[in-house]
Length: 260
Image: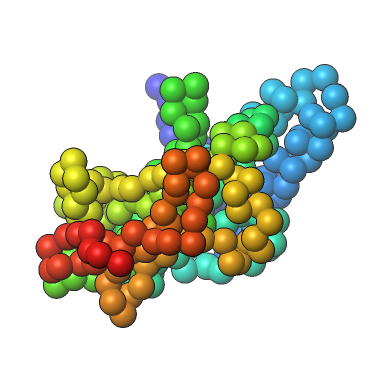
C-alpha cells in the first residue's frame, strides 16, 4: 500500500511540474525532443547500428510528449512555437483558435514518406489532443494548410493534406473537421459528390507533372472564403495535374459541384 501511495505521489508531482512550466520551458523541452528525430535520422543515413530503432523511439517520444503538452498545457494551442517551426514542424491553427494541427516527417519511410500528426482542439473548457501515427495498414499524410469556414452556428475546418508514395506518385486531398459534442469529428460530410455526401476529396497525381513549376505556383486545393468555393485541380487520364479546376460551392447546406 505504501508503494502504491508513493507511485501516486510521484505521478502527481510529475503532472504538476509539467503544467507549471513556463511557455519558454515547454517549447525548449519539445524542441530538444524534436531534435532527436533529426539526430537519429542523420545516424541512420550514416549506417549506425541501432539508429533506425532509436529513430522510431525518438518519434514516439516526441509525439507522446507533444500530445501530453497539448492537453495539460492548454495555452500551447496559441503559442507560436517559432523554434519548432524553424526545425520543420508544420503548425497550422484555425482562425478561431480552437483547432490546431502539428505535422512532421518521421524519416522512417523510404521513397514512401512517413508522417505523423497531433490534432489539438478546444471543446468547452477542455483542451484535447489526438496523436496519429502510421502503420502498415494506415498511411498518415502531412497537412499543409487549414481553412476555417463558419456557416450559421457551425464551424468547419478544411485541412489540406498531401501524400508521397514514391518519387513519382503523390496526392493531395481536403478533409473537413468539426467539433461536435466535445469531440473532434474528422468525418464532417458536407461535400456532395456523385456517390453521396463526403468529408474529403482526394486525387493522385504524377509528381513529375508539376516538378518544374515553382512550389508556390503549383496547382493545389484552395478555399475561397469570399465565394465559399473549394477549387480542386483537374487531373487528366495520365495523372498529370492540369491548369483547370473543379469548383465546389457552398449552397447553405453543403459544397456542391458547379460549372467552371
